Length: 334
Length: 123
Length: 151
Image 1 (cartoon, rainbow over the protein chains, first blue to last red):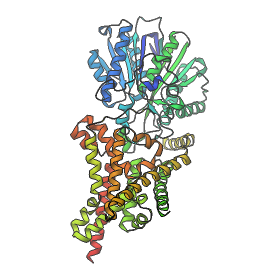
Image 2: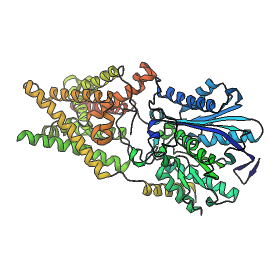
Image 3: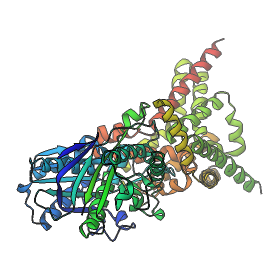
Image 4: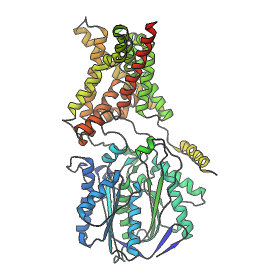
């Protein structure tokens, strides 16, 4: 392992992702990626009393299903790195308590999926761990009542707003899974603040963060976007990804046709989600169900995933502070 | 004929107030809660100068139901309270005039929350 | 380029890029929804007046308000009101129905945090500003009027 340039770490052998699993809600299943989401659920309360409990239950179900199907026992896991978008990472905390695996909470809002995978791969590549469990998730109703309004409150969504994805994605990094899709480089992003105050316009807040991280990564590795089969941002939405393209072209990088945005992709325009999906579960579920599977079947050889997180707090936002954003990048090779 | 004309007036005034609020919201991106407070203030000022009464006489429910009507009846209640009960009437008159609506909102909401849960949004 | 200048240029750029809500449609919908709710209220008032012709105009108005509030809270409880509001926008929340919906939706949503700190405290999460400001304004008007009437 070595560090190149300012922000990028090259993993010496690459860290294989043994398995990856996504569990999503009904609305996501009905979206354009529906055929890739094998596992879904229709009752978004999971028979639980609160949406926070439902989110936990969703994440635990996803993790347990994945471990069972791949014959991994919980005692094999060295560490669990997880993140979500609820205050104090409640979902991951309670799930970690259930699993009884040493836990590292990773908060970078919707960028949690790449943050946890990047940290996990460093731990494995450094020789400290053999198996690391990584997860990220979000739940529409739980996020709505924390960040916005009660569900029954009648308000209109702005045309530039996004819809929190109900879904969870989890993966196991394994030192010995060398024939599996590998994480070969990671790049941790800087927090940027471009002065966006509107809590609904997260795409615009996060696009500069994605641009900052990708530019840093391309500079560090001396590569161009065309060197990769596939570049995916987390949840910029349609508006955010248009801004991201524009910002990258200002930095003299032309993002070609191999670029997608997970948030833009997960919902179709007829589903009433305006600019698309958001939330930690968005990039996590698209990574597990779509990108990982494509890498596994060798459809993609080299891919970049930049999950983006709007690090907003309702308290500081009401105090008039802008929304900072961060984006962490992982490079995947089949 | 007169009844139809009255309903047209109600529709026009009620609709117009809402459309103005919508226009302000679209143009300035003010949140719903702030719009409500803004219109309430307008109502209180209009009620304080006893101007909204004329609109109510002209357009009935089209003027009383929007939040401006709520603000004006708060202000009018305070004025009437001050006239009949002096200082304490001035303090409590506004609440007294609107108390029925507020009490029903709170009481019924409190009651209803025992019987229902929030529904998932489909879109 | 300093940060402030960069941010203000970026905000301008985002403003131009952001999709505009179809404002004419929104206005028309708000107009129709607001007008309909007010006509509905007027109709209830007319019905009450036809049964009790001697009732004074203020009492009729109070009955109209209470009817609209009750209906709104019931629609909120059945999960229908937010669909109407999605269509009507300001047309549904500027009339008293918006006030009732904001209280009922908060009560239903936050009952999970208990009756004291959930329903009791958070019921006014959205409607609180309206009540607080309303009471404050009415007191200001009342006191001003009281002082003027002394002279």
